[in-house]
Image (tube, rainbow over all chains, first blue to last red; front, side):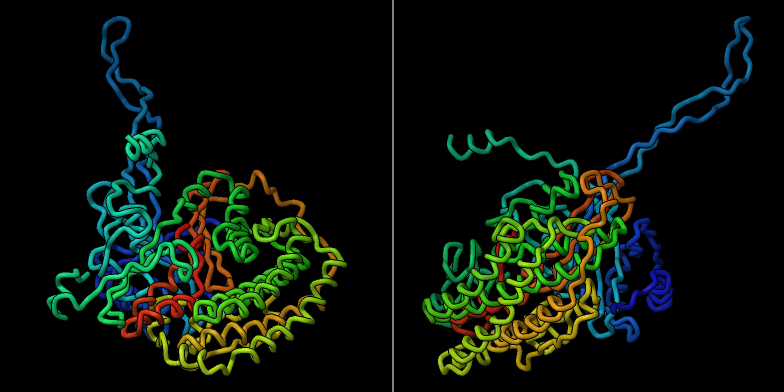
Length: 203
Length: 378
């Protein structure tokens, strides 16, 4: 049977083995119990190399690479604020008033890597990296130089989600055609109406 | 990527020829294209081009309920709908924490191993067809595949799009008569493997065309995430049925055949050897199958709402590691639904295997990978 690797242990090993790297364990609430490790993009490549080369971990097999799109989230909460309120007789008194505060958390794109070890027969170790936002800071380091299996899968994430993998040897669209503009797997993607497409093909 | 002009500068003008193999070419097993650069007959560059069958399977599944994706998984690798169902159900079962009754686990093993038999039988038929053994081997292989499809039809109502498994079990039970028919098929199957081996294993043309062609080193195979018979043909012992021991595979005795050279011949023989092991697995599963329920009646199939979280479930499909990665946001639809397609990833090394070989070898190297475009393009 496959031996499980506790995420906390892997986090400790990474932080001991890669100088400067800080790893956050993302807890998974489902019964699968597959917790993942969130990396900072600038250490992504070094951590990946460490995981592959470390004699105890030997994560030599990068099985699955994929993207996830997390939209901007709007949260509104009711808070009590102290305000000077004019009373009926015209005097200003301090009172507690209910106010709705809206906060917007910017969304991001996430690349998820599932690693296993063929030599040690253990896994999975799940790595996550997040982009700064969904519009102009969409660069992440490519892990293809570490695991060749990421080559087509990172191309697919680039194609469908728009994450740009720096240092990827051949980053082109893979499933959509070259002239295609949008990223179809994003949550806010709107497919073009069929009539428009046929109109362009048969004017 | 080197342009044609740059290549001319290396090799001299006019010496490099660019050939577009596919998308309409019988040896590409579907709509798949390879951009091949040739120096004479020798391949100097090869880039696969995907997407002709892309319909954004993952997005469609994210827009429907969990249950609605099961019939859709049939269409991924349309030769092996049973194993596709299983991989998806195992991911959902991990995500929602569902248990599967023992009888259902045994039937899952039986139908999946039957799928493996018919997949490998068709693959070796196609491969020999690609090599020019026109007709006969493919017809022999399809004769056997037909028998398995007949069994699937009487069990599920459909020959290829079985839509058979459900979260926590199966859709219908296998009758005693069906199990007897399956036993008969399994009892006769070794005859076919013997016949096929005697027909061509030591054939001189087959050996000349396949031995030493398309060699894949174990180091590259592991790094490139190659899985399934192709990985084991390169001598790497990694079979998820053994490693994860999912279902009831940990109670079943079987060996994992391994290749020595990682060439096309080893990949061809790997399929024959795996079929022999599969027959052993089927004999044990059909002998040990218990009575009992086939699905947990408490599982809410239609309104399934797993807790917020994620799960990655994988199985050893006939073509390699088929995985499903699901993220739940607590609603009835998966927030993220990802298929890890074994054959797309197995094609990562297609160029490495083809470089330096003749253009005629590209066809059989591709044939030995065992691809299905429904799964590659999704």
